[in-house]
Length: 301
Image (cartoon, one colour):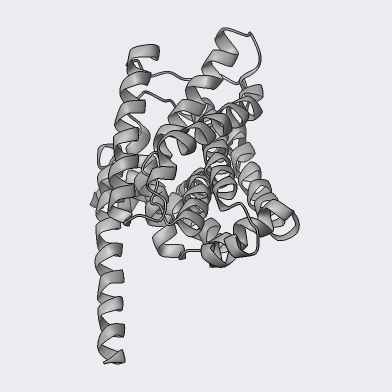
């Protein structure tokens, strides 16, 4: 570990490379966290299925490439549309039963769904690790000391465009305004004539669609297998906790920061400890937030 830190001091451009690529990776985390923040804020549900939606988006992109013969980039809109339908169907079969219930019940329900989806994916697609070669170049800077994959750059731009599009959708469209009204006070929204059941179904579908698009990027930039869901769920959970509910710009900043820190930790501690670092960081953040809440409660007394 100390030798890796020494390398960073000896080669500052390597540090720049880790930071730049970490920020680009963080865009992926921010996109997934976007959907979780939306569902949590509107429906009061911590959606553990988040990572499995990402995984399904990746497998749909593989089907688009291998079975339909299309470029994997076409998998982004196709995965988004298919996952919107999956999210809509899951809401009307399972999720609507846990809305307005205790949050612990919704966690158990979505955790069960995540296991079911992972096992079904294992049966259908197999347990092999898969990737989709998009044939996109890697951009080199500073005599090759800093390298940026084009697909990661596309993911970064897509994250910014999606964030801006979602913000405009919530501000300007009638459905977006209905979602905001339902998030603030569901009972008052129902009295004003808003079909909250339709709003919840659309919100869950939008979340699944975002994750599906992310899955397409993940399979092109890295690889997928049926059990990759949990790390993405934990990361998005951590980003939402740090940013705070309803703070969509904060989600982007927290997601980018997590990507940079995780990439740097992967180099310093080794790739085998990268996920362990993420879980440890989440525990630290939860303890810290609990400590802050405890101090605030004492102050109120």
